[in-house]
Every structure is written in structure tokens, then in C-alpha cells.
Amino acid sequence: MNRRNALHLGAVAGLVTGLPAPALAAAGKPPARNGIEGQRRADRGDDTYLNPILAGDYPDPTVLKDGEDYYLTHSSFEAAPGLLIWHSRDLVNWTPIASALEKPLGTVFAVDLVKHEGRYYIYIPFMAAPWSEGLKSFANICVIHADDIRGPWSEPVDLGIGGLIDPGHVVGENGKRYLFLSGVNRVRLTDDGLATDGPVEKVYDGWKYPDDWVTEAYSLEGPKLFRRGDWFYLVTAVGGTAGPPTATW
Image 1 (spheres, rainbow, N blue to C red):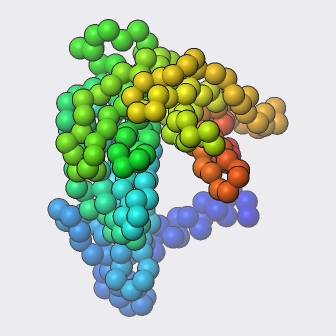
Image 2: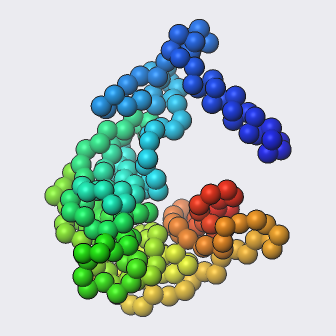
Image 3: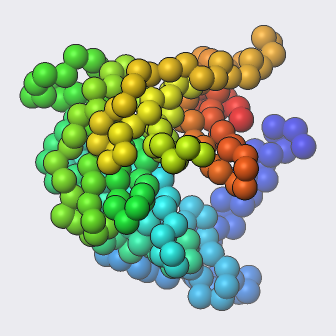
């Protein structure tokens, strides 16, 4: 399918999803329902759902599966309270339950929500606000933690990592904790996850796409690791993450 046809289909789909409730009913589709504070609900009530599931400004989502529960948070930038936490049992119906970051920190983005040995952690890259003191880089990474997802959450702990973003937490086969960072770089953490335990290391140079591809920039970032059996899988973006064309995978 070429780009023109794809755009045409997208426009048609937008017109269909934008039909008023009577037209949707006539087409055999139940209308959208209202949820929290009148927001559109993704769940149609007939085992189908609407995209986007969370309609609005919820960029860089990080989702944690914790037993039968799913928790989500996302970039909150300068908003305070920040890092709104959502709860779901089916990945479609989400309810806000808490804010993890009560005080302004700066520009908060692309965090990682994890659980390790019964405790919740959020690793937070941020650009320092003008009132921040003692920070030596435009981008820093800190961590907050809580024993209950609803809080109370700790005050931010500065990890002393400057100039890197997009933390991704993983536990190695040796039981040690690591953060993977833009680059792709890696740093080992202490067992409590509240400090670094060694230097930042370059561990992956990335895939070099063909020279004639039109991209924003090389921008190797967003590394996330998953373990399946004996293998670790790295998912990362390269090629830029803002505007068309966006990241290649």
C-alpha cells in the first residue's frame, strides 16, 4: 500500500469513528460511553474498544503487570502533582488512582515503572527547573519508591547520572539490577536500586540503517530489556522520535 492510499484510508477511518451516536448505532456499532469526569471510554461494552484507549495527552506510557493488575504512568512534564498512576484489569478500562510525584521536579518524561522484591520504583529522567540546585547536567535521572502503588512515594533520590535519558530497569542473570539508558548505555545499581554501583558503560552501538533513509537523526534511545527464558531481548528506537518520519525499530 502506498502512502497516498494509507492516508486516504486513515481519513475514511477518522470519518467513521467521528460519526454521531445515531449514525454509529445505525452502522451496528454502539456509541462511545463516558468514563471518569466525562472522558470518552474506550470500552464499547460489546467486547470491542476504541483507539486510542486513553484519549488525550498521555505520552511515553510505561506499563507494569503486577499479578492480575496493570499499572500505568506516563510523562507529566512540568505538571504538579505529576506522574499520574492508572490501574486496569484488562488493559482497556483505566482508572486514575494516585500521583507519585507531588512536588515540581522540572520537565519529567519517559519514566520506567517497575516492581522489585515487593517494592515499586519509578526511574525518572528530567530536565532541571530553574529553581533546582546542585545539578550539573541539563538532564538527570532520579528514582522514587513506595511499598504501596498508591503511596506514599518517597522524595526523589538523585542517581548522579547526567546527560542520559530513557531509563529501562532490568535484573541480570547474576541477580544484579541495571539501568539501560539512551545510547545504549548501562549502569549497575545497588541492590536497593537507590544508587549506582559502578560506571556508566557503552554496551550497544545500534543498528545503522541505510544512508538514504530520511530520518530526524540517529537518536539511539528508549532501550527496554525483557527476559524470556535464557535470553534477554532489547527493544530500542533509532532514527528520531519527533515528527515524520519517526523512529525505526
